[in-house]
Image 1 (tube, rainbow, N blue to C red):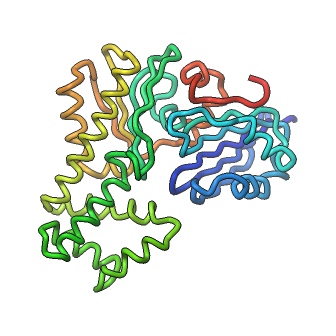
Image 2 (cartoon, rainbow, N blue to C red):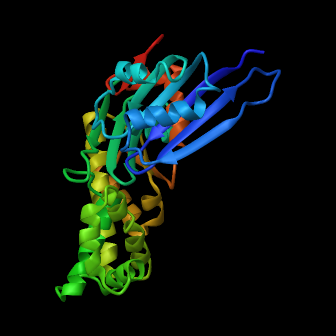
Length: 315
């Protein structure tokens, strides 16, 4: 029995997932499954080495699908990625895309619509199903990503430090910061400055903002409301630029979004007010980005997102 292999990788801003599947014919069982996790921003040679060390013995004459963060709405250089992997891993074809594409496919599959991803960062991607798409925001935490986890976490931390100064802010968020950091939060700024994973550390405070809002803190609720409005603005802009017409399917993806009622309420309220052709909003705490990445191998993804998907090897 010949077993075809598929290696599917999703490299996110603060976390990564890898799935190696043995796809067997109907006469045999499914093959093994291997999962790895790690920070997606440490791509390049380190990722190539870890992938190769993990799967070189198992993967042969198969396909590689890769979703990558940090591309900001451009197609990856699949030829360079393939060249780095060749000699470490044997494969026939590599398909790579911006990770907003893999999230879109994980949420809506090949259907037209808009997917807004609120992870560490934030991005909206719309597709009309005929090869025209629009990618909005996703510019990174220093230039954009409005409404994402870093954006929320930073504003939550700022409100905590304002309370520490006596400049207003939020006592509830200051209490949350002290629970996380100890009695003296003043040690946090220099530690963040030296932390190579400071983006993840700041984004991690978003869960405290969500919890404080759920407990009735007005400042935390206002932060989440503004986040929802920013995410809705990205979604409506993407829908307009992609030329979507009624009915428009919308998905909001991310654990932050799913747990934050003020954020979701503001997102839906703004979209329904500004884009009446939107018939409904589905909210997902998570989508299987690796499942979305695997759809890159099934030909339809390139037709949907020709400007965001790149292929090395047979198309």
